[in-house]
Image 1 (cartoon, rainbow, N blue to C red):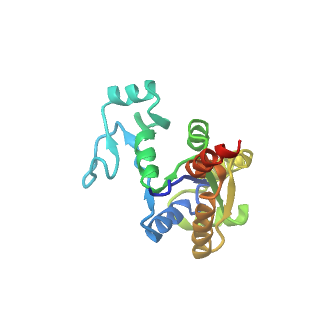
Image 2: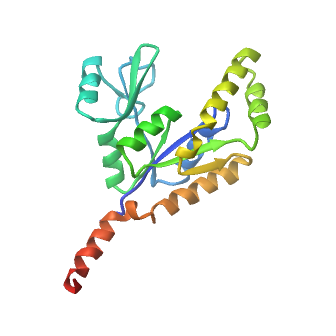
Length: 207
């Protein structure tokens, strides 16, 4: 029987590099799988149902909310987005470590509904470096950058709700550190509940 996987939730300040880290970590091992979101928005060219997203109607999404089928959900530009519990649990039962990149509010929802999830927050080494990265993107004006910095300040007050803090100072090193954290998370008691249950049953003869 394959060892169960774990759910890894990755968040971080805008500009911290979490998207790049997630892409790199998923390509590192076949044991990693990206979480697939459910959405009510229409598919874009090249997107496939069940690969890019699970595309559903508004009625079906609201049914999923009512039935507790989602680990988290939110609305964006008039469309619903959410993380289906069933897909995550199926991947985990197959021994896959599921990687979910999501903003802080969603991550906290996931932890409430899936307590065994491991929450990891990505940050640059300093606020100065964060602003430098946002500026060097060259895609936003100063007012927008300052708005992102204000949001980072607000988010920083809740980072202690995460299990691990990952400092993205060197990309290769950061990806390797994330890999090590995921491997270590397999040894947390909650992630080895099947083994612990088996040992407990074997020990009943000594009770």
